[in-house]
Length: 253
Ligand code: UDP
Image 1 (cartoon, rainbow, N blue to C red):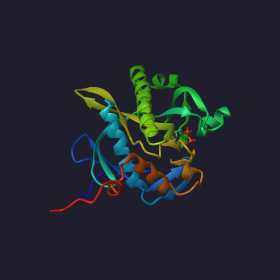
Image 2: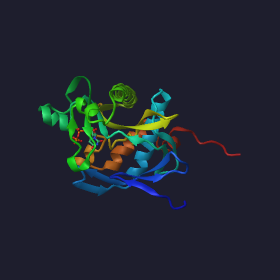
Image 3: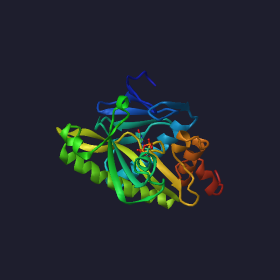
Image 4: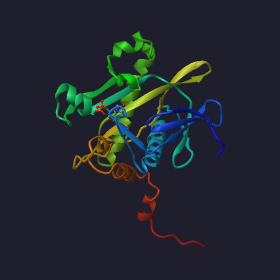
């Protein structure tokens, strides 16, 4: 492929200029980081799995009427997306207590919450993405009040969708993080789900055993991260190799 202009390199992805104005290419790296990049590793195959899984979730969201930035997967590690102006918030939805919430409130991990809870971190690596009250968002101009209302209702719809899909394959959706971006249509901004949705940004526990199938495997040294992500992909049927085990040989004429 011709040399492309790099727009941005993050911890797990590189963004390149896309082939047409208003598009970008997301390249999924094998790099894993945790604790604000204090812990780092290269994990063979993670980028390929996350590219596939994010495609699966984003196209699923679009199918139920939730707009996303995703256009199409280009190859094993890249996807074409609409260029979006990222709202500087990590939007976290929690169904069960875990991670920072469990710590903050002294709750046992896995405690079911009375209802799904949406919370926000301000995206700033230097500050360690601090948790912020909802009131800050419009006050500091990170999003308008109208956008914020839409972000909350969309995040809860995404939660319903993801929790349902996961439940169908024996996985409990503990929590997840998504990001939103603005795309411009006829001079009006429209919010879309942007970035990625993958086991890097969700907590996924096996319903039966409670085994972790997400980035906590890396954060907490619980085993092989690629195996965990492969298991999620296998259950969701997004691995091409899956097909060979479920179909009979076919005659080639
Ligand atoms: N999360 C993420 N990126 C971040 C912080 C959190 O994707 O920079 C995800 C994380 O994987 C989990 C959810 O958001 O699914 C809630 O994370 P939490 O606030 O508990 O933070 P952590 O314990 O991961 O530091």
